[in-house]
Image (tube, rainbow, N blue to C red; front, side, top):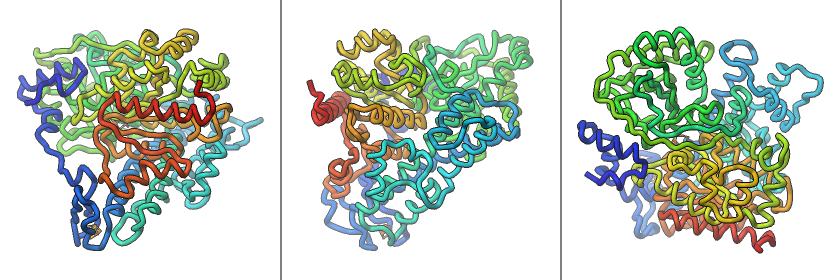
Length: 628
Ligand code: NFS
Ligand code: SF4
């Protein structure tokens, strides 16, 4: 067995891996060390798109053969990459579509448990999409907004609505390249079609559709999801939150919600506050109900309501090992199938709630969008019952990280500009005068094939030390939160320029923006920076870079590609689904930049990631003539 200290830098997770080994319970860390990655698959050099194959290429000499149909290595790697982007885009857009349907049901009174919490944001998004708002009822505007946003998914021709928010020069370059998305369903369908046997066999042409599909995610499905969720449940503003397994309470009924669509956790918040259920919990001997989020659903509720959060993707099995979880309920995405078995080992009820994501043998309680509390109340009751029969072997790691989260792009405006929905001018000015060297997005998953949290934390430390302001989302944000770097105190670790800005404004140098779909907040922030002026005309001109140091999901590849297509240099860590020395590699890693897009990068070491990002930021500063 591998040393626990080589698997994670999260103390709580380390403690639970040790306990699980003692308890004889296998976790995914140990499976990852036992499962050797296939060297051909790791470089994406195989194809199984038809039954003449599967065909394997030679990664050491990629051009020495072709597939049975004649497909070259570039075709094979590009097609595989395209299908990853299609899958990732499908995940984010299906999630966004779900939120949009909920919005429609709320406006039409089909769901009465929720109501519109941020009408101001509703008006703002409507105005951005040229919907008339003057002298009209909110409901009328909302219905128009629904109809407009539905096009993000279903439109077959034309440009998706959010293209109106793209900086004009960036949009112009997309039009020239023919990559403006029409509608997500159309783009995903075409991507799947073009990557089938015998269709698109030109890696440059495939790359165009790969970009178009990814843009339908970032500026489409994900962006709609973020905006609609803000409208329904409130736009985040800074809130102090405790993160880490120490948020579990020995004397309370602990319920964990893990997954991605905010509806389950929002409904759970209502049920956990229900006086009758609270009374039931107290009668069972508990001091109350302790609701906790994990992964992206948790990040949504953490940003909006300051709900405590137990940790990221690599800790979802480990948290069950505490024995203190009285129920874990899940919806879609990043739900490891083995959670069911680990939960069973500790007598924790494990419940799936979305018909799209059942787990063989697991209890399923369907959440009905029109009556969501029926499902969540049943889960709370199950958790209370389990609390009553809890075993004695509970072990809760003490450690938590206290930090500030919930930085929407609107709030960044307000914070730096002085008035709510004010301006990005102060941010741009601080970049131009050099106090802030540039902006970095550090995002994405954790992965058991790399030491949990390590690269996220070391990379961010190095960036802020060099005066780079860091924006965060996803499991990466939680890594930094647990490490205590999301509080204002972290300014002490920042370079002198960034520290000065942070102290003046009273903000941390690391701004947590929320879940993975909230990467769209970074796109809007970038767009505002361009529109504000002084930093070039396209997103590609900004002194900015992105990184997902420990990525694992296809969703991450879709996100990376929409950042690259939007103009951002994007580095992925530890692995990359690419055969080295191919033309497709050169295309993604070099040529796209010469066409005015961003480009992909790869690095294994966090300091190397930081070096590449800072060098890129400096290159952009130089091009803007602000390198002093
Ligand atoms: Ni993003 Fe959220 Fe985490 Fe990765 Fe999974 S939870 S959507 S995919 S693992 S950051
Ligand atoms: Fe092989 Fe071509 Fe079939 Fe792929 S599509 S499995 S390369 S024959």
